[in-house]
Picture (cartoon, one colour):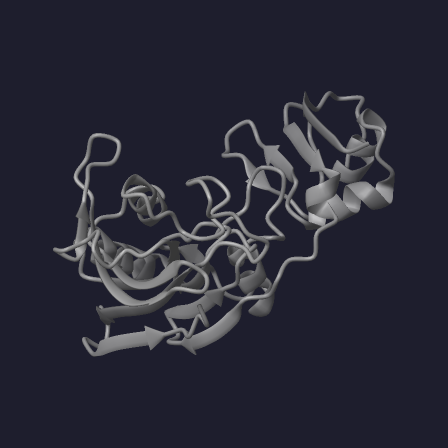
Length: 276
């Protein structure tokens, strides 16, 4: 069985634990149910509560509970690439998310996400809050908070554009003459979007340009869409562009974060060497 989903309300005569319940009402073995639970594919909604992931196979059920499983064999069989801790500042930390690792999970599981991998790194002794995201195909720096107050303060830095985010990308073609003003100022989804670009070099052998980027707005897939719009898509981008596909993966990385720490008031700067 490759994929299934089940959403079912618990009755009084149903099994009293999550694993037994799902084993009875799906074609999955106990071992597969336990694996799916540990990887975040099972959800429980109490009558007076929010839906949440449950991981313990012995989690108890009462009539009226709503238990859900979203089973994807291919996803659950994957071994996630591991993130790298760059700096632990106590209330927040900075990590390198490798390409192929999601920022956060989906209803089908979260073991292939940065949030879950960081929680496992800290052995679930710290809360982990996602402040900003990177596309799954991209590598680079992400900042995570470890308490609600830190999450709120750091989120406001991003909302107020007080965090400088720098990226490096390799794009198709010679971009030198395309951007005389070193910026892409084109609306996305009806909203203003500004991407600042400095061309590092053009490689005639590969017909690609290495560019350094700062985004001043945070639109969805802003960098990838902007470079496609000007005819120089990011190399390896699986979604945007033509003539830019390869087997190396997407050549886009978040390489630097700069901001004033909301607690110490010190200027903080973190860098990642992408190798692009």
